[in-house]
Image (cartoon, rainbow, N blue to C red; front, side):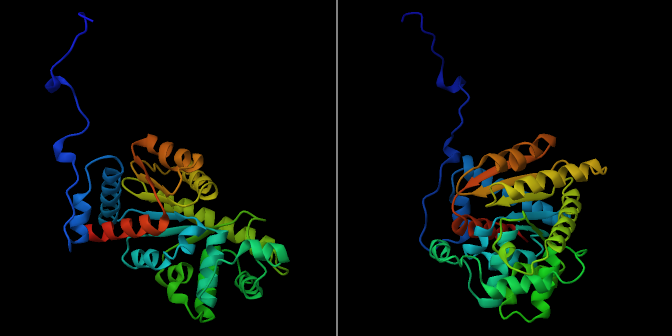
Length: 305
């Protein structure tokens, strides 16, 4: 052991310094104070960086797109998403088919998310008549505007009693694109008689092309968040990005993030890692939607002038 070489601690590059430590909480402190009290380490720094990227995108007029799984709506977060849309802090939302269904049911009935096990035993899971009938009516027109716009416009036209809590309805009212990306056979309404698969497919294809155009606007500082979609929306985003670049749009230097309670393979690869190889940054924030989304939303609001 006599030959062991040691070096002065001051000569070693360390990753943690006193300036990184969290500040103890103070009763009655502001949210901004709480945010500033977080340690300057790991996910806390990623949260700060993501917030700064969103604020910068808003300031520079770049696209800020949220790709959302249905659980974001089921966790009671529609009102926060709509508020960010109203403030121009979300410029586009991408939903899967289940997200659209939950959004519609909240708008029409003020409730959603049935007991799947009980309904499955009785053979009535997903068989709510009003839900299927509404989508049939919404799909009766030309699919060209896209599925999200058709559904949002129909909610407004029919005077849905809770349209103010509908991301789709408010997107149509505000002119904020809300696209719906359907995998046929995966949603409850696909079991309903009268659902026009041809119209549904054409409308969701129109939404895919619309999303690709939105992704093209992410070049030079835009932001894409994948919130709670493990497979479908990460795949849709990757194809939309490829299509935008194939059509001649540079689409580089943007920020992506995946927010979920588990970090799955496809969001990590298709949203966080692969796109970040073009001069952008990718972040992961792990936690429950009902905690992480309000935390992120309030952190953004604190940084807006």
